[in-house]
Image 1 (cartoon, rainbow, N blue to C red):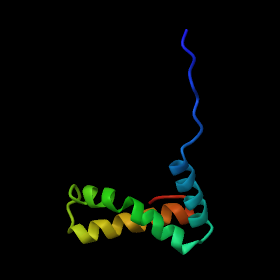
Image 2 (cartoon, rainbow, N blue to C red):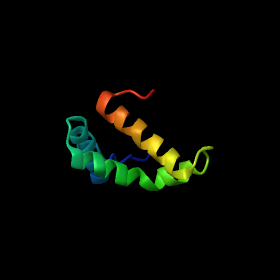
Image 3 (cartoon, rainbow, N blue to C red):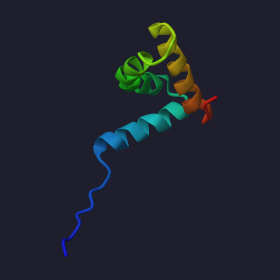
Image 4 (tube, rainbow, N blue to C red):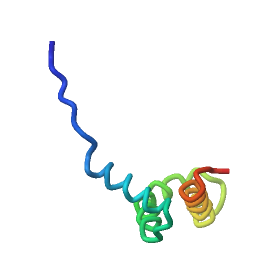
Length: 74
């Protein structure tokens, strides 16, 4: 039987979790870091939304900010 090597969480995951926690407590720079991190994904997803690209990205940003700040998405 092979032994499984369990690795702890990666530093990237730890860093994102810490940034998320700071954003939830009102750290504006942490919010901007999260939006920057997700920007390329939002750009990609905007191509599937039947709105102008800028408008769809703005809507995704607002939804992300609401989810971080209030813990919910409408």
